[in-house]
Length: 204
Length: 246
Length: 96
Image 1 (cartoon, each protein chain N blue to C red):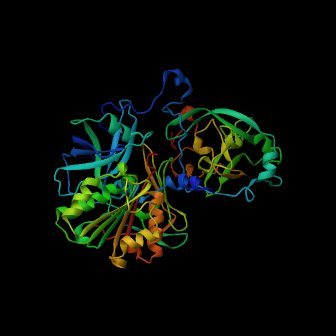
Image 2: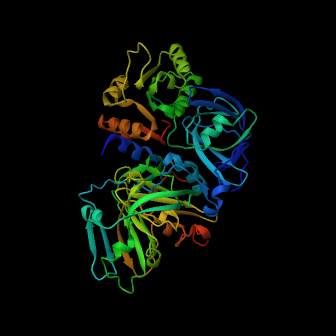
């Protein structure tokens, strides 16, 4: 897709001082871009719930109140979107997926997870990439309740993978036997999505 | 067969400030083709490391301006392309463009009237192409524009609209201001609503061909109001722009 | 839901006109006037009038009535993907 080089157009930056923190092909942003696949859902907190289901002994569901009572922690992580922006040191208050999984007994066959959201969005990843602190369900960003445009009331955050895996407006995790391509994975995006290996598209 | 849509390098021949946030850029195009009023061009920037970004801008000029196009662009503070165009681009620079594009949001005199144009902010740009074309064709199809701006300083093409109205009794502009009207203003001073639309549309009634363009919220509100007023949906065309600058 | 939040959320949405160039490259002609029948609610709308979400990894075109995803487009360096299961059909003028 070569083009005429535009005189004086600097594009985006990879500042030298953070060069080693930017995955290949990524550029630094300091704002928080809003990208979505559909209109912002608005689920009232008294109707919100979070569920873990699928290949588990028995599914479990939390109401918003119950979810807020789960042990939570703050995270500071770098996030990379496949559309090439990376934001450093993002701060979240969240419940780790490890904590959530303590409430269920996962079948040995349940090796993959489909995360599903209000509005119909889905994304998929291996269970072993969600545990040991690798993933969390966040309801505060930058010390404030997570705004709806950024996925509030709660979103998944999986910082070591491209940010399309960090499902906004998340409502649950389904344990599955196979790695089932989600919304973008089923249309040309990489099934895994590691920014450090530039796994953007299927076939990469 | 339609010619293939391909990128070409346009050359900047003129840059003119319109309001504090908007400028009009004229480009000479080696492969110019007559567009239909309402269409747009895609603009693409490429950095030396290969990074690319692209935006669409409505054509402000009428097809009667041969060999060139004018784009009126609002400077979005944290944008990528508009700050480049406003702050860096100079006459004789080249800009990669592709077009003309769009078949849905178009009007020309062959489609008839009466014509009601409703616009907010930079949504007025494609509507202006329609009015300039209508004037160039010396059309007497009745036409009105209802144009929403924040303040008097934000009204793009104000002088030209007034001159057009002065020279043509079949064209009438209406303005509304949502933040601060000009001193002594006795006209509308609120967001466009059903009452305002009904008043402006009254002489045209249900025969109006309506084009609505601007920020999504304005377009939604106007389109919904028109449907409520039982204007046939085939007579309504809409184009939503992304969020404008603060 | 207060006014500010409504403003921000809806403000980000555009319509099919915003992807007219992309659709023309795929189909070889303007597609904004083509009519899509929504597989969800059976309403007809011209592609130019569909809700469009364009800032993410791909484009999603949705029914203005029921918000069902009518079509999705992804462009990768080696391929363009178009999925339109959300359309019962696309109807357009016969080819020129």
